[in-house]
Amino acid sequence: MTDLFSKFDPLIQQREALLATGVTDPFSLVMEKVLSPTVAICNGRETILLGTYNYMGMTFDEDVIAAGKEALEKFGSGTTGSRVLNGTYRGHREVEDALKEFYAMDHAMVFSTGYQANLGIISTIAGKGDYVILDIDSHASIYDGCKMGDAEIVAFRHNDVEALEKRLKRLPADAGKLVVLEGVYSMLGDVAPLKEMVRVSKENGAMVLVDEAHSMGFIGDNGRGVVEAQGVIDDVDFIIGTFSKSVGTVGGFCVSNHPKFEILRLVCRPYVFTASLPPSVVATAATSIRKLMHGSNKRAHLWENSKTLHKGLKDLGFTLGTDEPQSAIIAVIMPDLEKGAMMWEALLEEGLYVNLARPPATPAGMTLLRCSLCAEHSSEQVGEILGRFERAGKRVGIIG
Ligand code: PMP
Image (tube, rainbow, N blue to C red; front, side, top):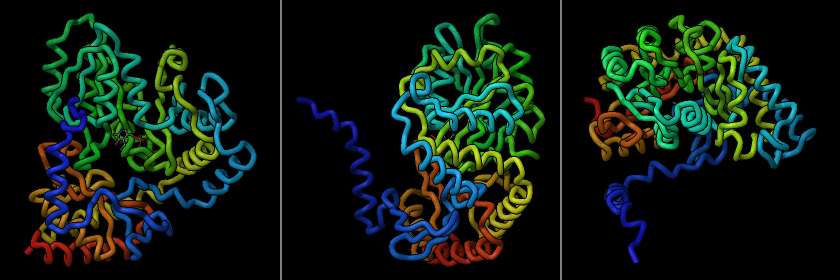
């Protein structure tokens, strides 16, 4: 018998070697208690959270919590069924209405996660003989959506408009084409040049899908994402998003103005063949989305936080993923995985949680300490975060 697990041996060895250095396992942290969107108890210690996707801090919003409690009591703990059978409750319609209003679009379809939204939409609309043209640094859910479908996959260099154009021009003029982009790329926190990319895609007869997972609620005057900030929201065919970041719960969605969009509810397998979201989740999501429509003060404060942290880390001598702050994500580049894990642990000992990210999630084999800011981080907390980075960075020898 061949042990099917032997393929994992290199990873098991790498992990064992890392743990043998005495470092705490960075991938098994437990949040023992969560006190607010920005503070939790980890290893018995009060810890500032700088590695969540809780960009707008909605997880403890009192209206959001109240909506969830009410739905839990009125509609029960779960739907026990697919959206196309017994799993569409009033709340699912209400959250789809909230999304249509939020994006000012005709159609909205809610999935159980953002991962499934990408799987479902990409694999369903791009079929045999069609092409999916995607940025090489695309999220795993986009790649998995491509794998699940029958279309030909063409990747282009990250955020490179010319490379995208070259690839598009090589494809048969009459073939179906879907260009898949992200507003904010989650590893380095960099923004895509969507204006040019959408133009080039349209000139070459392609439909465009933009995953705005990391920009919803924050980027753009109304929080509609990079498509809004760059003035191309009316030119994109599909926006994919998630409830697991700014919205503060779980779920995924696609919004579109395509006149035939609703047929997807019958043919999209990751929508049909899974249970729908629990009533409490859709109620919290709908309330949160409606509040995000009026979140401009919070958006302004989050931009302030992002600028202060980016400048502070740069001044301390850390190497960052972008020259300027472009989103709520600031990536600190580590020399290697071992140093990255040591720094991660030193920060945790200081009472600061960040994300340790490494390949295959990261581009170019990088190890990153990914900081994601929240609109609920106070200016004092951001100052405190910089002090903790300075102490940990000197202790580990990342900065002088
Ligand atoms: N798209 C992108 C760009 C993401 O970063 C993520 C999650 N990190 C997803 C989709 C999936 O979202 P969800 O957590 O809702 O599955």
